[in-house]
Structure formats: structure tokens, C-alpha cells
Amino acid sequence: MIDWLTTNFGTIITGTVVFGLLAAALIRIIQNHKEGNSIACSGCSGCSGCPSTGKCKVEKTTHR
Image (tube, rainbow, N blue to C red; front, side, top):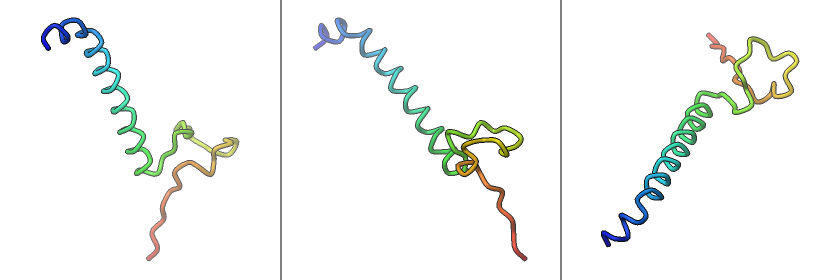
């Protein structure tokens, strides 16, 4: 068992780092989705000419 771990130590570390980066990216995408943002939305000041206008966050208005 120890021989196998020492032989594959570099692969294990690399796989762990790649998995961590993928998990961080997925968490960020989920957080953006919950906030109403889209992957296609770049956060520009106006969406008048943007082809992804329908996917961007829409400001919520309160009705009183």
C-alpha cells in the first residue's frame, strides 16, 4: 500500500488540485445562478445590444 502511494503521489496531488478547482468553479456558477446572474452575462453597464439580454439578471421592483 505504501509503495503504491509513493509511486502515485504526484498523480494523487494533481488530481486533488484539479478536483478542487472544478469544485470551486461549480460552486461559483451555482452562487451566480441563485443571484440571478448568467454565465453569459459579463456585468456590462447596459444590455441594449447584448445577444444574451434575456439571460441576465432583471432588477426586481417592489410593489406597495
